[in-house]
Structures are given as structure tokens and as C-alpha cells.
Image 1 (tube, rainbow, N blue to C red):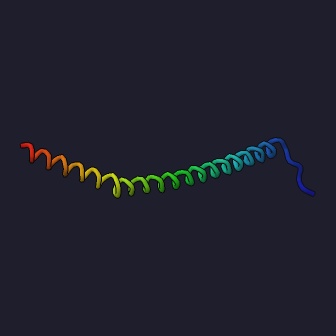
Image 2 (image 1 turned 180 degrees about the vertical axis):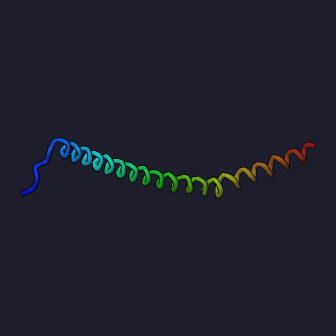
Image 3 (image 1 turned 30 degrees about the vertical axis):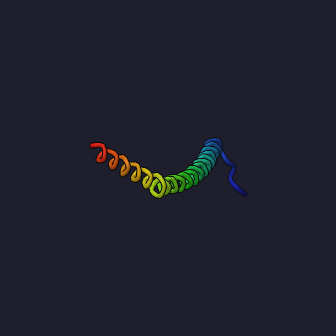
Amino acid sequence: MAPQENDIDSLARMVAEGFKDSQKNVNERFDQVDERLDSLEKEVHQISQRIDTVVMPLLDDHSRRIKDLETSVA
């Protein structure tokens, strides 16, 4: 026969179950945040690559043309 649970044991069990549920919820939220951060990291990497392959060459070209104009006017 199992011993009967007293009020303190019952309260301790309820608190422990509450902490387990809270921990599970926190872990699930951290997992969601990790997934979103991974997605954001990939997006930032893609944007950085696009800047390096598209924007920087255009800026370099404009800068060269401005320099050519400045030297031809001077």
C-alpha cells in the first residue's frame, strides 16, 4: 500500500510539476528563437553576398567615373 500524500508533499509535487512545465515551455521558446536566428543569419549572409557581388562593383565603377571626370575637368 502506497503512503498517503500529505499537504506538504502534495504542494511540493505541484510546484515541481509547475517547474517542469515552465522549463518545457522555455526550452520550446528557445528552440523557436534559435530557428528564427538561424533564418536571420542566412538572410544576412545572402544580403552580404549580394552587396559584395552587385553593389560594391557598381560603387567602384561610379567612383572610377567620378575620379575620371574630376581629373578631366581639372
